[in-house]
Length: 185
Length: 352
Image 1 (cartoon, rainbow over the protein chains, first blue to last red):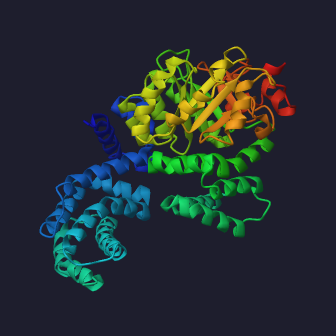
Image 2 (image 1 turned 180 degrees about the horizontal axis):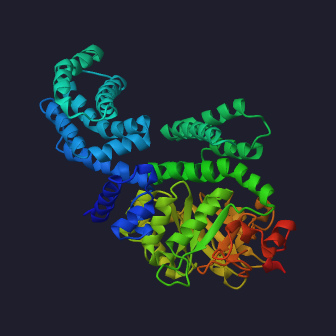
Image 3 (image 1 turned 120 degrees about the vertical axis):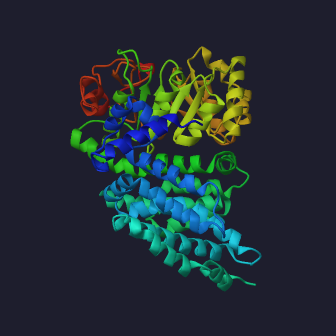
């Protein structure tokens, strides 16, 4: 699928966000800017927030589609944050118009599948019940999303790299440790 | 009820659904037991007895039909039907519709039929106008819509756009079925709230149903058939093979629109008989008045809006005194024509 229309609508929304906040932008504003009718917008999206979610999903897929593993996870997270920084006005605007809980829900939806992959790779030959495994995936997702949301809430300061490096030192080996503790053998 | 109250009610009902969804055969009886201890005896007592009877007779036709909803239908589509039809269009909409019935002193229909004839010709309502009608209907307490028209599938984008925008409503589209392609079926799976009713004639021409059914069955989409007949043409449906053929094609629900006078409707006699025997649900919009408590037309349960915006009482009674382009939807429902249906039990036009 080419996703041409979706991308054009997304570009219009991002353009409008330079001037207005998300809650002030109507579907009509977007379709007028894009030169399509409302029917076309609604063929693809439920509403403006659905389009915002789509943009987040696309962004995340750029970084997560290649897969995340025990070796590259630091780079993937770092690239993801660089990517968010490039879209700073969009992300900040979404953050202010949505509220923190909704933004966290978005991010969790995006991050969880990738983290699930990662955890299942690290699991290796350990015998772990599905329930425990899901719990570890939850904990890892909450920490990542928490760090990113905190960073967004603080105005997305570009000097996050240093903090991120300290986090990586802290996190290194924790996943293995958590899995060891819940493993039956 | 307040919006928060509704959210909580909805959460509770969706939890019950998730429990049922995990293992329908084992959990449906448990759910009924729970309901018995939780709800007073007089709440939905008839329905509870009927459902209890269905789940305890495991060789019964209704039990087979119920279980087939899990084997034959996509998980997300089934969940959406449950959420939109049982929770949104009934549990939550009924109190809202009742309130507005009092407030405006007129009927608020359970379902509104939209005759879609494509944008581009200014005589006909376009997407924005239909969208506005649906928004007005939702505010009144109507969350169920029929999509009709000469052949609505000539305008697939408009229909998908309406379904996608109003994702909390359920749509049932009457079509000849010829326009149902793999691509359209994929769009139906994406929006999840559109069910098709394929019009069949009870003649060998219904071969096309088998083709359409093939696509929909493979995609795990539910589908219905609709049959319209009068006294002369009823022979085509007044056959056991007709009903068996529908079941063979995976049809779950068969809708009948009958212009045959009461007492001379042999198809209806069969419908009543097969309800006890065959795994297919049947609704006869004109003859099931004992279930619905009288004629459904005139906005009591149903009304129809023509392609040009005229609000009509019934598909057999195409008279209208209001247009949604000139008045709000509630003003149309308050018009003299509709108030006749509100104020007294109007006798069916077919039986006059």
